[in-house]
Length: 489
Image 1: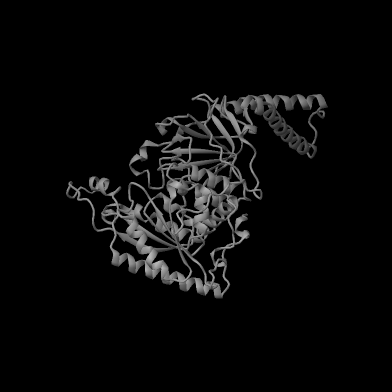
Image 2 (image 1 turned 135 degrees about the vertical axis):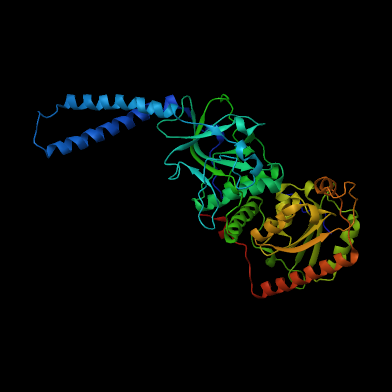
């Protein structure tokens, strides 16, 4: 019985293109970038107007002598000067609105309407919902932000501005910016992944373009960190470590505009199952490449008798939602695994494993058994069609709401099979009667017991089903994993 997989080094994936180092990014003021560009734009506009007028005048009887060259360019210069006040008015007319619209505070989860509430998403059937700037819906305007508040999103604001008429004193950030809205947090790997996976779907559909920077928001408040697991997954997926924008050197009231920006605020909402599976395929494949883990798939591994190896992993937790009697649970799984030729049980604590060690462990896993918790996020790193067994403490079924099904959903989205749950009927009593919210605060972090008869039968059924599937796949020489799914576009 292996306690954990061997430690792996984490070399940078040489096959993926890395974005340029953030130290090389250029931020330019409006005065330094757009004054010459604006002059050229206005001059070209005036020349075009006068040229069209001059061509039209050739078809009409002359009423005055033709313009001299000097007179022509004088009129062009006058036109340019006349248009400058219009551009200045457009700059001054840029209107900033609160990122967090308090009018929708009581329905923030209904479409995340309180974040950039005036904007609608682009959504094609079965695709991710997003906003992109500049674009046709934005009529070519760029996205601009103002404010760096980390406690109240209503003090941070956004606006749209024409590229030739950015707000006064604005800074332009070059390259692609990913703007992520998260109703929860980026420290929990499940909540962080659910908020950022949608960018991978956009990445696949847009020529594998990778971001120069990330901007993270929680309720409109700036956040500057991701869980290490999530950061490394992003590095593996996009070919470079994510740079999280902190707006250093920018005053609180100074506008910042983005040459190109993509905003996500609905997680994977709107995506078809096929599109989600494609997204998780790419992340799985690139994580394995990043960690130098084989892409051949589990079917390639057989025992001495030539039978497919079945990897069963018990991923343990400490503290909240851990097992009351770990050794008893391990004993039951060991006993049932020993009855299946080729079965191998691995026991590990996710908190003791690096990112690449978790990737390695999941690549060896056909059946993942673990309590409900963030460590279950690793399930998408198994081969497609692998199995998940989930354990809950007392009280969750009645009081936890739909959130208790998130890993059931993730299993479906990533092409896995959720094989049901064990819900402990025993646990601490709630002293608050029918007050579900206060009772859930007790049950949320409860420990999980077991029933030997039920756990034995459940484990046996899942193992036998996995054995049949393995034999069928081996006979058909079916291997899902390949380097082709690491490509996108």
